[in-house]
Length: 143
Image (cartoon, rainbow, N blue to C red):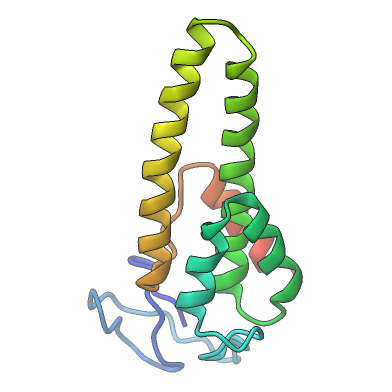
């Protein structure tokens, strides 16, 4: 069960988050989450690895992950975030001078975001980006 406030994973049936202390909604039915992703890795490690290769590793983990919504969330967020940044970077770099400067800024911001997202996933947090995170959460909760 994931904390709605900080996103950290907690044992099934816990009433309060072990990291931030927020009250957790105890559901009457099992959510089907386990402490291990179907990849054999812990969800934190698999979530971190979703970002390592940008949108490509996101696709890989989306294809191989069958159980963990945490991993699926990070895979979808990686695909959306770094897919959009890659397209923006390629478009900007095709524009002489001004595009090169803006493309470099996008690349630097993408690098910083990449590091932040890996750290957040590695520590077990479902850190959502403003629009990509909401979309990723909807996709991860499907089927």
